[in-house]
Amino acid sequence: MSLPESEIVFEGVSKTFERPDGIAVEAVRALSFTVERGELVAVLGKTGCGKSTMFNLLAGLIQPSAGRVRVRGRDPYRDFDWFRGKLGIVFQSDRLMPWRTAIDNVALGLEVNKIARAERLAIAAQWLERLGLANRAGDYPHALSGGMRQRVSIARAFAIKPDILLADEPFSALDEVTGNALRAEFLDLVRDTGATGIFITHSIDEALQLGRRVLVFRRPARIVYAATAGKDLTAAARATVRDDILRALDIETE
Image (cartoon, rainbow, N blue to C red; front, side, top):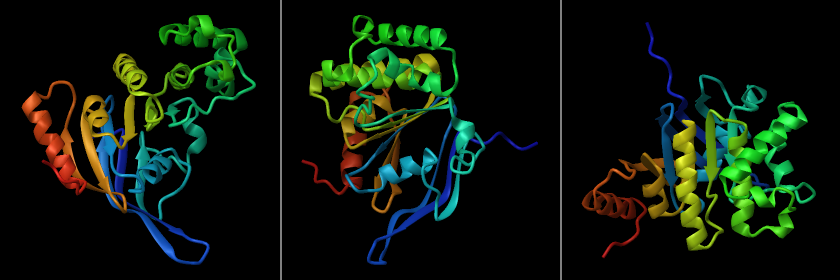
């Protein structure tokens, strides 16, 4: 009897784009990795290394030029509609609809999934309360701070109870204090819900804090280093992994 496939599978995946001048640009090269159910993996790399292309392949927004992408055993590009309500995404910018209140923004995914209005508003209200925004439910995005808007975005992603959660540098535009607070809350939410997650970042500290594993990409997107991470690492082990990551990224260490 065959073993069940991992929750997320990249198998020899490559992606090439053609520029307007006809020159082919390789964004992803023979990328292979797996993510198990309930695991949160941080993907780290410099700007332009192909992290976002990998993200778009995983979200089913583009298809690979070669290789195989599978999420829960399905092709996210060909089976795009099947993933509705199963895939939650948090972007670098909050991407809130300015004409909708906070609670209506949180309820958007539930509305798309045809949940009745009373039920979706009740669920959205619970998530706003959980993220400390119960008293801002009726506010429009322009009346919220950057940190508040990103909390609304996180609430929107979790409100649909996703099996898979994708986060593309969601805290990079925030100040350090707000970002640190949201990272801790985000990690608690992932653990509490049991979602499987991919978290893209260019911050080594963020990757080590959030990921159970860290995958380091270099351009074109390929894994040049992988390590176990998370809060259970000792200070000495964390320092070693950090130095290894810096070397993998070709950044000088002291």
